[in-house]
Image 1 (cartoon, rainbow, N blue to C red):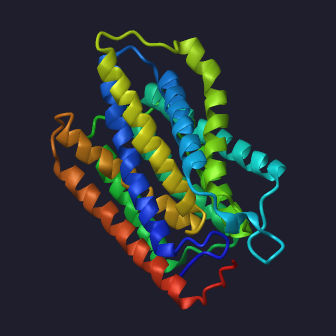
Image 2 (image 1 turned 90 degrees about the vertical axis):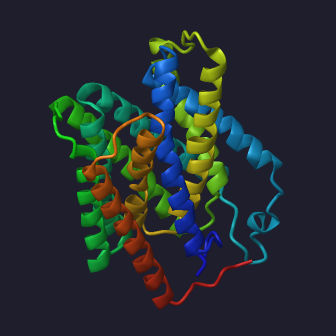
Length: 324
């Protein structure tokens, strides 16, 4: 089944989201290595992540073959999106992206990685499911509800299983703000994907440009250029963060989120902490605990179950004709 407005098959959209979630999980390990190699702060790291990402995305957009079918409107193909609407979409999505990233890093500083992660990624699916039901008319269904609950349980076991976690109210509020930014970004992407004529590449480039502009004052106050004894290693790490978990992952995320139901997107993207846990064991020397294994199994099972339910539901609904 293909989405009428973008032509992207649903199965490919799910695959894009799975790859994006796994790639996002590598950013945490890379950021830990950046902090070990320099005195760079979270705001500066977020800014450079956006800056490198937007350069790579813009280069890819300029070098790719022009899609002539997307530019036609008189022959019945998908109409081109007006420049004003593109700017609105990029601005709203970029603002959500900046809030999502910056509030999360601030929550980590305020209340620790474990609580910030479980609140942000735990509240995200709930806010998205509620917003999708109220604004988009998307019903989660019994299978979807079971998958969401299973994923949240797996996340809680994965993050909090080690115990000894300190909870600070200000950090929890920042994590909720981060979840709200992520939810708005996801819901808007799905809304515009259903509306038709969405240019995911232009939206992604614009979103990162807006997010980078929002983060620049914070990065300047924090220190834009870090001190390091190993500049080559730092540059390599920044290049990786800007390429794989940023330019590649967000391009896949925005493309997949435009065709997949919002609640499904939120659960699939919970693969991020699974990927982070695997890398923490493999690269950072952290111990593989029973909680890690149990939480990973719960979350992977939930993602697989929800992907199957999404595909079955799509097959049960007649596909809309793809124009052009």
